[in-house]
Amino acid sequence: MNESIGALHRAFALTPCEARLALHLVTGETLRSAAAELHVSYETARTQLKSIFSKTGTSRQAELVGLIVTAFPVFLKAGAVFG
Image (cartoon, rainbow, N blue to C red):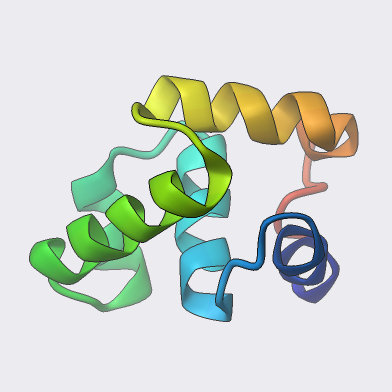
């Protein structure tokens, strides 16, 4: 996962926490589920998501996921996001 986090940091200036959240969303998790997996409150995850939207120029989760998988098609491979 460190390579994926680094790639998102370089491409979009995401913090490690923001990158981890984005990666969870790319796998199809809901924001609530991702927050639980990352051991942060739902409100913290919402704040991070708003920051991710700002940094990536997106405004919806589906748009964000589309941007990431288009920019990094390797994330589509099984296990590539967290492998």
